[in-house]
Image (tube, rainbow, N blue to C red):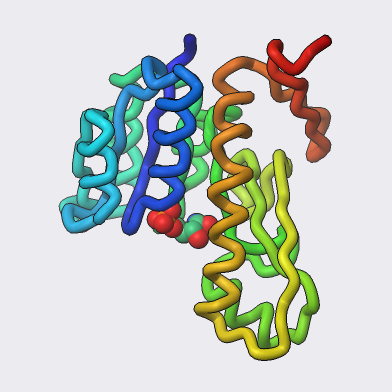
Length: 207
Ligand code: GRF
């Protein structure tokens, strides 16, 4: 089985959904560790509750983005990951970092990319009046929120939605779509052709 490292900055609900799937489906041995750039991230307790080793790498301890990326990369590399899953990791990773771990970085973004890259996605979706919104799992490339798309889920935008109510509807879908993609990456079932991708079915689903 291949190695998985997860990066967080906050709540850790996507982390929880992945660890839960790993436990239920028997791939917890792949989980090498969780790294947070914030010491107060609630997700650290989530990791501990699953018995996963945690490390804190505070970006505030470093003089530059490049120095942080280098140090974070060294900590990650020591865990020999095949897949690095960003789970609400709120630091933009520089080009050198993305190149260092090229093909291994996966992220979940709370919008239907390529719409609404960046922050405040739910508020911006409401401001733009879109009728459908959602979440995207994608490979990380050096262009922010623009890597090959691996999975998407769509939710309706309701007349009375607030950014909070819309975020909650999207989050349910995030928790549904992210774990199977992480597993597929670990199992080498993801094929890419430029920005187009294909996820092959898990062996137990093959007839
Ligand atoms: C999620 O909405 C994710 O899509 C975004 O940051 C949020 C993290 O939430 N990248 P959590 O920490 O996984 O609960």
